[in-house]
Each structure stands twice: as structure tokens, then as C-alpha cells.
Length: 451
Image (tube, rainbow, N blue to C red; front, top):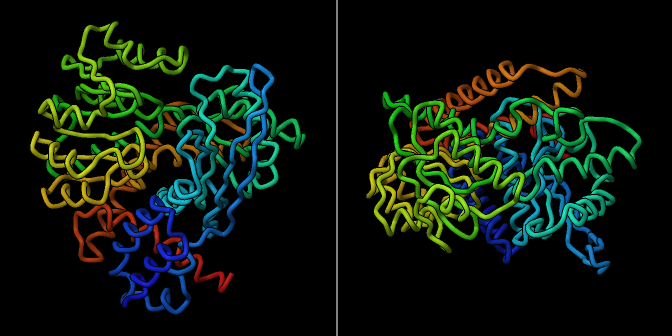
């Protein structure tokens, strides 16, 4: 049995209930098999065994009071996975589905994503099973402050720099940063995704969506294609989806889908600039449900179905797909339906939104497939740029940040392509991204000795 097979088997044996983590480890490790023979020094130093174990796992209770004065208790998590190339860096997710398996999978993926940006950032992730949906601003504030009362012990500008994720937007970041500043008595770049008024970066809200589109454009260019007049399916309706739609529109494409956890909207006329602004107002300000869009613009609404289920059932023609909602949203059946309906490019705006079966179908059908750790790295890349600006006590212009983001995504695409070719898997972005990110981190770990 190979070292990598042994590592995968051990992960599944010692943490048998962590299915999401198993999936992430298996996907990465299997693609690293070409590195075993080429890098015997990694095998000798136990790099493969060490990289799947977090450096630190923090699990804590979060007691808070709701608007009625009732005490509620949630679980908080922070998994600091690897800081070989820089401070721990990764988002905070507030959602009822959050558990240790999900946080570990996200933190593990973050190691390689951050390495691919070329910025000095390690991998981490955190969150809670608290769901901000339906909560008042006061309840969200009290929860965020209770969460930070424990988290502050484990983070710092040169230690661990969290950001936002699902359920954690500008409001939540503001509450957490304000409380951190109060109890630590310092103004520092300990969180990213901050508002401009207190140290945030221009283009940070847009960065994950913009970056996914920039990466997709680079993939399309390898076949002499672009976004002009292409039909695009986007899932989700949060930050990533909103700015994915905005950038696709700017590049001449037409997005026809959007969704949230309750419904999917199909707008065959396309979600133009005006409609995109409506979605931003609906979701970010009013915190409404996406079905309200159907009432506003008289288009089809499918309650209880995902974008990918609707495409499968309705046979909607799609050129490009950008899943931007959550993990494992595209099943094997969904992937086959996309292929059957003409899709030839998939760029993952979310983390691990395609199941292993879906990825196999994309590869078998020569679909351009950009995995999340590459395609959605624009968000953490711009978080890294925010950290740079905080360290230098200055703020770059929108154009400067956007140009840096575009250059990072172009270089990231080239890095994936070069690594895939160097290791005998030309054009396989999954293999290229995993090997390129892993070898950078592995060499740093090797340099430190056994620590």
C-alpha cells in the first residue's frame, strides 16, 4: 500500500464520522500520488501524514441571550490547520450545518488555496452552528460578542487572521472586530472583510465572485473562448453569487439563474445590472428570500429545488456553470445533465460544491473544471491584500486592488497549468492546483524539521 493510501485509510479510521473531511482529504491526496516517487524526501519526513492533521483544534461553547432574555447555547470552532508559509488564515462560517467535519474540510482546503495565491498565508477555518437567518441585529451582535470572547485568545494579526464566509458578512465582521478591539485595546489587522471606514480593502466584497470569473475566463481562453454571449448558471444569492453575476455582465455574458436555500429563479432574459442591484438590496439590506425576485420581475420560481435540479428537470441550455452556494451541491446526475445541456466550463465559486462523481463526469467529458481552491481563491487573495494594507497603514485604490486580483488569478491559473503538465496530467486543474499548493507548503515544512 502506498503512503498516500495509508494516510487516507488512517484519516477515515480515526475520525469515522467526518465524511466531509474524508472527501476533501481523499480528493487532494489521490491527486498527489505523482509526488510520492518524485519527492522521497516528503515521504521520509512524514509530510503526507503531518499535513492532514491540524496543528490545533479549538472547540468552545457560546452562550448568549436572545431578544426575549432566554439563554441560548451554540458551539464555536476554530481549526488552525497549517501555518508553514504564514499566519493561519481562513473564514468564519455561521450556519446550522456547521460541525467539526465541515470546519476541518474547509481548513484543509484553505492550506492549498492560500498557498496558490503566492501570499504568505497558512490555512485555517472557524465557525459556529449559530444561524443568523431570522435573528435581529441585537441577537446577532450579542452572539458575535460571545463568540469573540473565546476566539480572541487564539487569533492575532501575526497569528491567525479570520475572515467572513457563509452567514458572516459585513455586519458580523463589524460586531466581532469591534468587540476584539474593545477587549484587546488595540486596532490591528486581525480580521479581514472589514468595512472601509475601519481598515477594509476596496474590492474585498467583490473579490471571490470576480476572481472566479477571472479564473473561468483564463480557462476559456485556452480554447479560444470568452464570456461574450455565453449563457451562465450561477447558484447562491449571497456575496459570491452577486459579484459573480456583476462580473459576468461586465464581460458580456448572461446569467439566467440565482437561488437561495428555499427556491431557484430562472430568468431567461438574463439578470442584468438593474436586477443584480435588486438582488443585492434584497439579500444584503432586507435579508429577504429570493422568491421575491420572481414577483418583481415576473419570471419562473421553483421552490424547494436547487439550480442544478431545475436545469436537469427543465433541460435548460448552459454554456458555463459557476456553483457559488455550498459544498456538494452538484451531484453526479446534475453534472451529467449539465454536460447533456451543453455546459463546457465549470468554475467553483463555493468550496467543494461538486461531488467526486460530478468531477469525474466533468473530466470524462472534457469539461474545463476549475476546483474551488483555485477558482475561488480571489477572496482570500484580496484578504491577503487587505492584510498588506493594514500592515502598511494605507489604502490602495479600487483599480490597484482589482488589477492585483486579476494578476493573481492569471498567475494562479498558469501555476495550475504548469504543475499539471509537469506531473503528467496536462490540463487537469484539480491535480495542478493540489500539487502546486502542496509542494510549496511541503518544502516549507521540510525546512523546519520535525515540528
